Length: 406
Image (cartoon, rainbow, N blue to C red; front, side, top):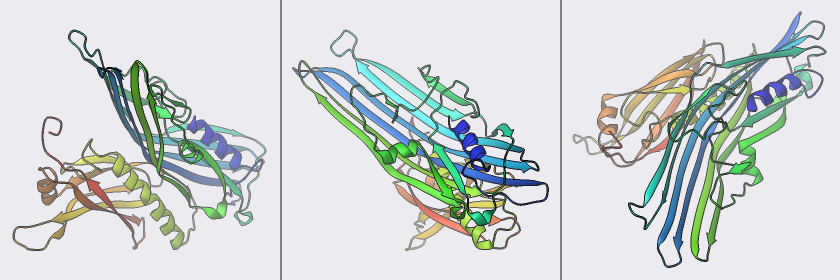
C-alpha cells in the first residue's frame, strides 16, 4: 500500500545506503522533513444494455462513481551521531467518494421490470494523521551541495472498510455496500468491473493511479500533474441476445513534494512553495462541494472543507461572481463567499468554513442558471507582509430546488 511504500522510499532515500536527499548539518544530529501531497478526482461511468433480437429489452446497467481526495505524507528523518537513524511518517487522508448503480432486469415478467440499486458513500473518518516509525543503523547524511537524489511515490487511494496499516480508516455507508471491504474504485488498471468490455489503460493514465520517480534535491519544490486523462472501452455483441456497453474512466490529479523544514529559505523560495501548494487548495474545494452543486462555496450555504497544508501562515478564500443589480445597467463583480484557515508548524490539514455573504445567499441558494465563479486563494506566510495569490474560474451548474435539491 502507498503508506508503506512512502515510508520505505523515504527511509531509503534519506540515508546514504541508496539515493540520498540532503539533511541539515548540525553538531549532534542531522534532520530533514519532506512533505508529499497528492490530490485529485476520479470518475467512472458505465452503461450496458441488452435486448432480444426481436427488439424486446433484456437488461440495463448504469454505474456512476466519483472520488475526490488529497493525501499528505510527512516524513521526518533524523540521523544521530554514529549512524543510527529514525524515520517518522505521518499520513493524513481526506477522501470523499460516491457510487450509484442501477441494474434493471425482468422485462416482460409479471411485475417487471425489477431494479436493483446500489448507492454507497465513502469518506475518511478523521483528519488525524496516522503515525508510524522505523529506523536502523549505518546512515550517513549527504550535503546539499552534492545535489543528491530523492524518491517520490504516489497512488490514488482505493481502500475499503477493512483496516490498512498506515492508512486512516475509511467509512463506506449506504445501500448494498457490503462488497466494498477491500477496495472502493470499480475500474482501475489492475481490475475493471465492466460486464464484458475491456478498458485499456495507457501508460500515462496508469502512472496517475500509481507511480514513482527519482528527482534531484535542486528540483524541489517538485510537482507533476495528470490532467484530464481518459481510458474508455466499447463493445457490441450480436446473435439471439444483442448487447452494447460503454465504460469510461477520467482522472485529474497532481503530486507535489517540498522540503518542509529549511530554516533559511529565501523569499522567492517561500513564494514558490506557497504558490505550488495553493493549487492543492483548489483541488480540495472542487472535490468537497455538495453533490450537483459544483465546488464548495457555490451553494449559498455555509460549507466546511478540509484544506491541505500550505505552510505556516493564513490562507484566505474569496469567491466572487457577476451579479446584475436592477439599479445599475452594468454587471458588477460581487463577493459571494469567503473563508479563512490558519496553519501551524506541523504540515497538517486545516478546516475552512466557507461562509456566504448576503449577496451570495440570495444568488446561489435561489434558483439560478449555470454560473461561472472566480475563486481566489491568498496565502500570507507567518511573519511576512507579502502574500501569494492564485485565482481560478469554476463552473457552477444551474440550480432548481426540488426533492433532490432541497
